[in-house]
Length: 362
Image (cartoon, rainbow, N blue to C red; front, top):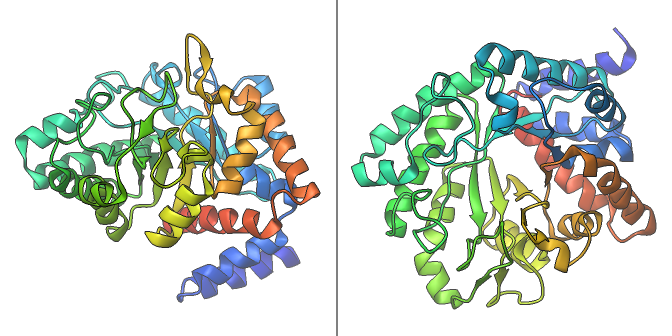
């Protein structure tokens, strides 16, 4: 056992007696800037196996998260489990030897990532129409157990919004109190089995799909607190591990930037005012329509990644791993130049590692 291993073992033993934060702090102190930046990046990739270029990327940049889509998962349970195990084995070999969040969008209904023989899961609206919170929790427990066996430790769900022009079957209903109640049981079901739930899309969607255009939320703050906020407050009180931001302008609070890139929305409102202590994940920075990436009108992907970190986002989602190197380099340059402070970086890494520790990933 090396001196470093012994030191971490001692800290781990202490953590088991209630000193979790000390273990995480000790780990962060041993990490390089490069290793810290890597933890902020979540990537997707093509294929049901890790290609040689993808393996090289994970060796060069041991990212903090992986997102899997249907094109990664369609071959079935055996291949999924082999894939997630290979990802984690590879990342555990790269200093600082920290396993990844492995995430899927397990909303159910029209958002399908698995074939029916692996997981069949009803839509949020289906749950809402049945109006049975106990059923929501029990069904989520069943699905979470399957995900856990497959090596998937994060669910990018539930949607914590009321129905609207964009969100129809993906939400529990039009009554925000129902959304809040169902959302809490959804969260409890998944997280009781070690799968992190992710509330989305904060602060909501506008009148257009954010994958096609930059929408707007023009609700006054009082109306927002009555008709949108209760579901997020309930989720935070229930201990939800992560919250995903949306690429919409919340004009009442900050009309200068989409929520993902707004410090006022992410840090001042979500983290400070709502007291969310978990991990803030951006929606995919590559959300695109036929016209291209919707955030391109604001800046390039690497530029927007820096702005997202400045805003307070902890994990930058990139559905295409080919952008990982340029994003990594841009964030590092921003740190070197002082555009991003190391304390801002450390806050995100602390949140990420604490969440991984809480759910026995790390």
